[in-house]
Image (cartoon, rainbow, N blue to C red; front, side, top):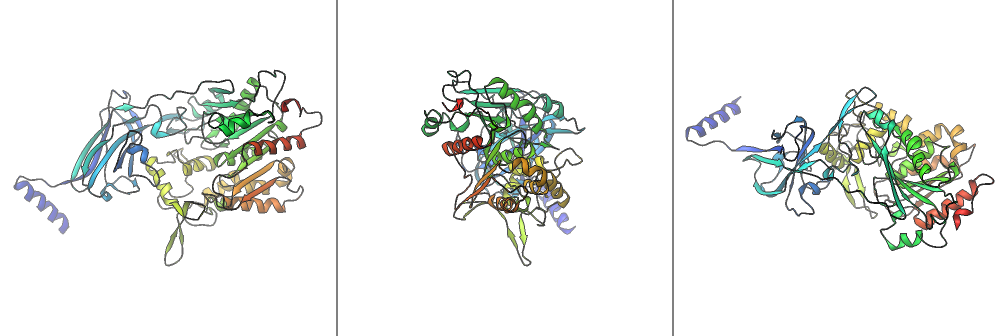
Length: 536
C-alpha cells in the first residue's frame, strides 16, 4: 500500500509541475484497409533487430536463436483497429518487452491471418491456411506486414509506438511443367469434408529419360516423403551430379514422386490419419497415389511402390510401410524423426517428468535440442518450444514440436491438440504420452503386433542414420534396432545402418539408393513380373 501511495503522489507532483511520468513501452499494431478490407482472426507480431536488409528484414530474422519476437492472438480485428503488445505478452528470446536493453533498433509489424475450419469432428478451429507456400507464415500469401522502421527504444519511457501493416504478401508463382517434371494438384474430397474447408493435395513427378520414346513401358515408383516442395524430386535440375545420374545411359529407370500435403498445422501432414490433422493417410492412399498412377505409366503393384525420405520424410516413409504394409513394397528411411518415444529426440515422454530440464537434486540440467557432430550445442529444447509459443498458441506455430502434437496426440476440449507437455514449463502429461505410445510409437507398434505385422514387413524395412544425428534421433533408432535384432517368427530381413560421426541427415543417395531399390525389387517381385523393360 505504501508504494502505491508514493507512486500516486509522484504522479500528482508531476502533474502539478506540468510534467507527466514516462510510459512503459508498448506497440500498437494495426493493418491498413488498403492491404486487407476484411477483419482478421489470427496473430500479430513485432520483430526487433539491430540491423535490417531488404533480403533479411526483422521478421525474417526471428527463429529459436534469432532476434526478439513478440506475438499476440487477435479475434475479429478490423482494419485500422490496434492490437497492443506490451510487457505482459510473451516473447522470445526475451520473455518481455521490459527486458529489451535501451538502444537503436529496427522494428517490423506482421499479421498472420487465420482461417475458420468447422471440422467434421464437431470442433471449430482457427488456423493458418496454407497457400501452397508450405506453411511458411513469414512468406504466406495474404499475410500482412509493415516496412522495417529504425528508431531509438527505451522500454521504460518510449510509451506507445504505432505500427501499421500496410502491405500484403502476393501469391506465389508455381513452377511450370517441363519435359521431365510434371505437377498435379487437386482438391481432396476426403480432407475437404473433414476440415469443412477446401484442402488441396498434390504431387511433383520426375519422369525417367526417354519416357515418351517407350510408350509401352511401365515403371516402378519411388514415393519420396518429406517437407513441402514443388521442386523436382531427387535434386533434378539443381546440380550437375543429380542430372547426370538421372540421364545416364546405364541407370535403371524409375519414376520419382514427391507428395504435397501441407496441413493447417505444418508444411507436411505427416501422412497419417490423426485426431487433429484428419484423414491424410486415407487421402494419400485413396486419392493422391491413384491420381499419380492414373496419369503416368507406373507399375500399379505393391512390389513396385517404394518409399524413401529423410527426417520428417524418414518417419513418414517408415510409418506408411508400417500402417499400410500391403500397399508398398519397401521403405528406405533416413534419419527418421523419433521412432520410439523413449527418445523423443532426447526426452523420454513416458518416464521423464520434464522435457526441458533434468532434475539433479541441487540443480537442473538443461536439455539440448540440436548439436554439431563434434558435440557443440546449437540450441536448447526450451528455446525452440518457447519460440513456437510466441509464433502461435494452441500448437499453431507451424513448427516442428507443434506438428508432432497435432499428429501424435489426442484432441483437447477446445478442439486443438492436447499438449504433450506444458509449453512454458516443460512438465509432461503422462496421459497424452500413453496416447502417443499406442497410436504412433513405431517401435512399440511393430513389437506389439509383430506376429501379424512382421510377416508383411520383415524384409521391407531399411533405416539409415548418423551416430551423431544433429537432433539426437539416433538413440530412438537404436531402440528400434534392438527389437528388430531379437524379433522372431519371422526374423528381421531388412537393415538398420548407423554411420559413425555422421550428422543429420545421413543415408543412401541417388545411385546407391536406386541400386538398393532395384535389387530389392528383383528379390521380392512375384514370378512373371516385368523386371526388364524399365532397365533400358
